Structures are given as C-alpha cells and as structure tokens.
Image 1 (spheres, rainbow, N blue to C red):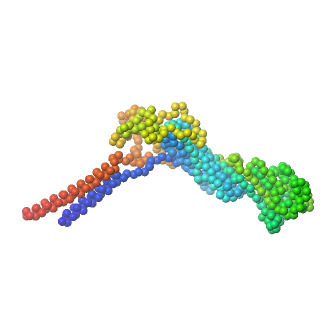
Image 2 (image 1 turned 90 degrees about the horizontal axis):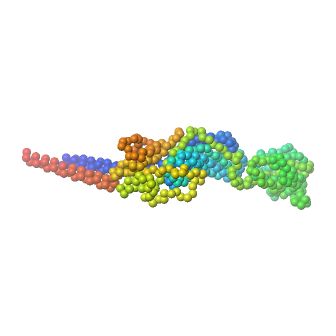
Image 3 (image 1 turned 30 degrees about the vertical axis):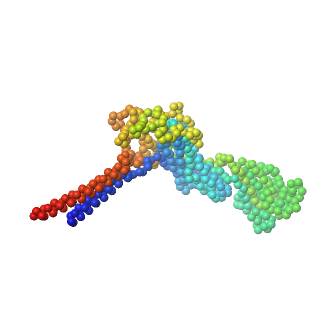
Length: 487
C-alpha cells in the first residue's frame, strides 16, 4: 500500500509539472515591437537671451521620430528640451510676470520629400523678472506632416531658435529706485502724507535750475508722475537725448495756461509718450527755474502687446554633438490585400483595403512647408506573404522588412531596412535576424496553433499520464499478490 501511495504521488507530481509546461507554452511574451527612434542631441546657444543670461547656454534635447508611418497618417516629431548644466537663458530687462519663452526647431526632410518641419512650443514665466533672471524652458515642442504617398524619408534635426516675448504691461518705478540716476541738488522726501497720494508716500524734489534725473527703461512708452502744485515750475523732458513731445510741461498750470489751485496733489501723470519701438530707451527730466519745485514721484513704463518677439532677444542654438538622422519608411496598407488563403497579394496595383480604412490622406498638410514628392511618387511595396503553416515567404513581386536606420552617434534602437528581390530566391541571400532576436525591438514569433487547442492537448496528455500511472500501479500490486499466494 505504501508503494501504491508513493507511485501515485510521483505520478501526480509529474502531471502537475506537465500542466505547468503546457501553460508556459500557451502564454508567450507579448512585448510590443519598436516603433520610434529617440535621438539625443546637444546644443550650444548664443546671442539674445543667452547673452543676457549665462553668455553661452548649453541644452540637452531628445528628438522622438516614428520609424514606420502609414500613408495618410501624420508623421509626428517630438522634441524634449532641458538645460544640460547650470547655464541658463536670462531675462533681457526688468519685467512683470508673464514673459514667454518660445522655442522653434528645424527638422530637415529629405528623400521622397524635400521640406522642413518647424516644431514649436512656449511657456510663460511665472514670476516678475529683473535683467538676467533665469528663464524656464518649455518641456517640449512638436510638429507633424501628413504623408500621402509611400516612400522613405530621412529626418534630420538642425538648429533651434529661442525667442522671448515680453508681456503687455504697465510697471511703476518709484523715485527711489536705484536705476534712476540723479544729479546733485535733489532732496529725498520720505513719509509724505497719505492724502497727498504720492506713490509709496515719497518723492524727490529740487529747487535749483539745471538739475536732472535720468531713467533707462525697456518698453514702448513711458509716463512722468509727480505732484501738481502752485509752487512748481517748468520741466524740460528728453527721450533718447531728443526733446519730448511736448518738450516742456508746467505742473503749476492748467491746460489753458491758468494757475492751478492745487497744493501737493500727488499721483498725477504730468507727461506721457506712447508708440516707441519696443526696446531700451532713456527719459530725462530737467529743472528750469531757480526757486520753483521740480519733483519726481515715479515713472510708469508701458509695454504694448507685441505681434512678434523682438529680434534682439533671439538666441540661436547649433549642434555640438555628432549629426544624427533617422530613415522613416512610409507604408501604404491599401496595397496589402490578403488572398482568400490568408496570404498577401504581391500585385502592387491592388488597391483594395481589407481594413476598410481610406488609403488616401486627409486634406490639409504639415504645419511646416513640405513639398510634394517627385512625379510618380514611390512604388508601394507589399509585405511578405504568409504560408498556411505560419512561415513567411516572399511573393513573386517584392517583400519588404521595415525598420529604422539611425545615422550618427545617438543611442536609439538600431535595426535595418532590407528589400528582397522581385524574383523568388532559391537560396538565402540576406541574413535576417528573426523576430525576437538581438536589436530588432520586436516580440518573439508566437505559435500559430490556437490557444484552446494547445491547452486541450496539454490537458489530455496530463490526464492520460495520470490514468496510465494508476493502471500500472494496480497491475503491479495484483502481480505481487499472485506471487505471494503461489509461494
């Protein structure tokens, strides 16, 4: 009885191992095949907001390009942006929050098409800035083009351009700001009465003729703010060294020339000028008469909304890493019509689409200029036909193994693109790594037998083994009993 129990346990254990092996065969790896290439590209940026920042700014970027695209689908190119080290773009002037960094890339297309993609992206700066404040980069930029014919494209990243767009704003600069320069003879008056309505409850005043105050600002306009008062005298105003419009104002007079009845009426805009070209400008005020007050409470700097970023702020970024390119294969699924036996027709003229998807591209096109392919385009190439046993065999026309070629020294997955000859070969001509092999980025080929059939067969084998073991053990036990009775 012990031998019976021991044999039964051994038989059951072997059956369990057999069932586990069957399960391992039925559930293969389902990892997805490679479909994109990622290129790491380094840049050095100079000029514009690079100059107002670290001088030279170094970027590390990653360009993502699909390796296979169907006709009619968009060719999407993404570009991640990061600073490579401690260098940074810097704010070009003192500005409120809301300034915007705008990055434009340049992707060269060659081969079946000649053209350029211009990926773009932007990000607002969250804080107020002084000149040289570090600027944030957008996380990424992108662009796409619609492809309407089969063929092969070489995609090559080129330069990057980084612009800065200042926000539309009005900024008050108080009279005690260190960027305002004064000649001698000015008095700094603090803790003024609140009812005077002076900005920050302070102002500067002189009673001597020929005294000046200067302020260099960046914007499209400026206003001079001070008190209206009977004791004030004329003030001359210059913009960028030239007389303003008007060149002289008198805070003690009304517009009709009559004397004002006001005393210490602060917070008044005494003079304004709008419509300057955006950039750096200088305003200067000068006292005219001895014994009369010339006062300065604040300057209000105006920046109108700009249609385009200022050209002086543009930084240009050039490649410092080895140039890299990706070959992208454009496939036309409309030419891949399966035969009733499950094989793909090798006739390139076949236009039926078994999936029901339209083979022509939607109207519209790339957001960047992409020219049409050469007349006649590229001849679509059908995929290898499948034999009933699940193996691939080339059709009488052409079969194509589609993947990506990376040119340069990046770190993406590298595979190859191979086109078999039109005639059926009689012997292997090209060594091809099977699916799941090294550097293909694809899942291993799975058995074509239905999963249910494999599981059923494995189960039958398991239970057949159990039954056979039980019968064998019973026969051995019976034979042993017969021998004992004979003795």
